[in-house]
Length: 105
Image (cartoon, rainbow, N blue to C red; front, side, top):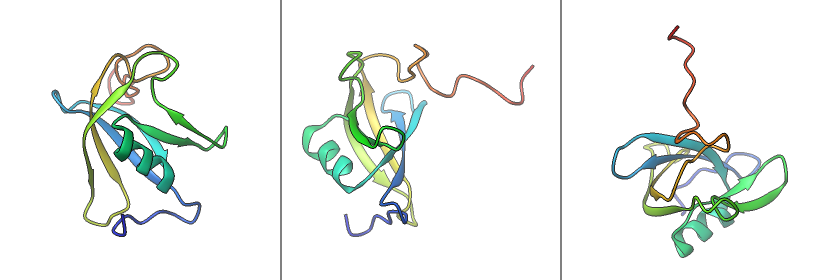
């Protein structure tokens, strides 16, 4: 945990990736407590900047994300969370939050 560089608000971006397909599913923010909950409980926990509260991804929808690995980049300022998802990651119902393109027509 000492290697993780949280920003001035105590947050670090967490990229969530499907452990089987390597598809990027979403990005959310973690603080030290949500990272600890994720590591201890085995499902993803994030910090909601808008609601100012913790959220366990999928607790309401049933689309939990079961953590297989948590990695961090060479600078220690970005997390990569590998998961087995129970369903879509995006609140729109799309499998991934990255379903729109700026470059394709």
